[in-house]
Length: 243
Image 1: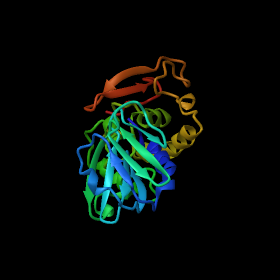
Image 2: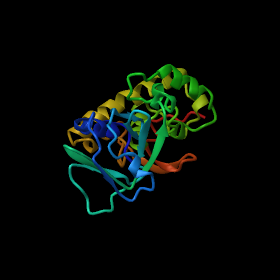
Image 3: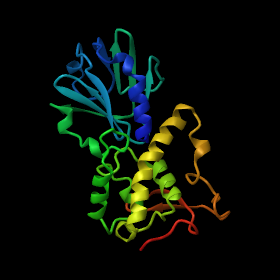
Image 4: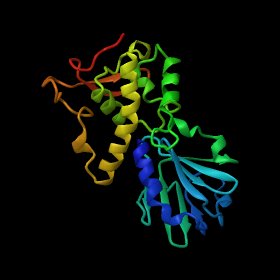
């Protein structure tokens, strides 16, 4: 599943189509595709893992789910979910969820919850964490209304960096550590963005998919944790369990 930084990259890659008219639409999406024909793109935006194509009175929301992909000015052999053709090129979207959002896009999203948005508000994130003291931090970090854009890779890397065990209870984690966690969620997301652009993301992973802790020279454990049952990679020695 693409995480927030990957959607930011997509948003940057399609800037050539901003202000352009859609001259052809096709694909197996069940939305009313005719509605898009001859519409002019006002802007491309992102919120967490959502890619947004904004028009005057509505927005096209694309969520890439687990296996969604895209191509710009080229196509895959797979059936296309939606093709948007412009006078200067095309966007092809595959294996994704697509829906219309009506009216002003600002009425649909809290931009302060997006860790990569300029409106990101760490204080709000901390307040929301206080409301879920009995949730495991591995689940809390994946809550998009708190940390929009954070996915499993970012979760694992952030928890390793701040030395918090993924099965720690949110309400038992010291305030200082919560502050570090919230700050690192944003910092690492921008590092992820830079490394992804340079095609070197994986070589910077410290915990995700790793087998040995670089700090302790002990095994990194792999476990499906929390309600979400997502893969966690962690060191039981240096990542403190708060319960």
